[in-house]
Length: 137
Image 1 (tube, rainbow, N blue to C red):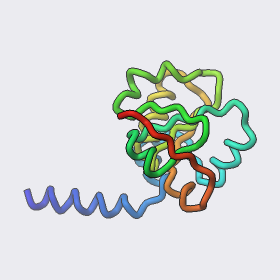
Image 2: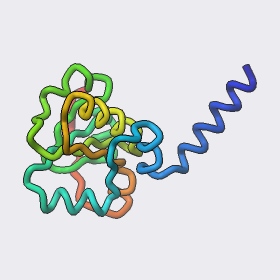
Image 3: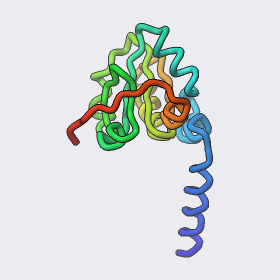
Image 4: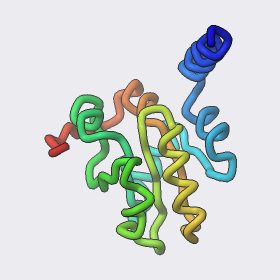
């Protein structure tokens, strides 16, 4: 039991220091990731982008998200992914990238082609524009 607890602690500490790109590649290696600068460029220049935030309502309220976002919590993603259009560029976002990688992988498995994952922590740290909506849980 101690070995398991020690291993879990090591993994949590190790992952906490990883970039969103690293974490996403561990969780979903077939999914392309974006860094904060790439995300900003896509949001500004690609009119076909659909930004899907898979974090909880509380996380979005406190940490912010981007204008025009679609909120589908990761817990509901498998049941609701069909709400996302297939003919657009899809960016799936969470805090660090792990949940976004899961969501993006689900989309890829269902035939979505232009799918990216991103962690919002770096985007926020760079001071890029965010909104802080009040969402119902």
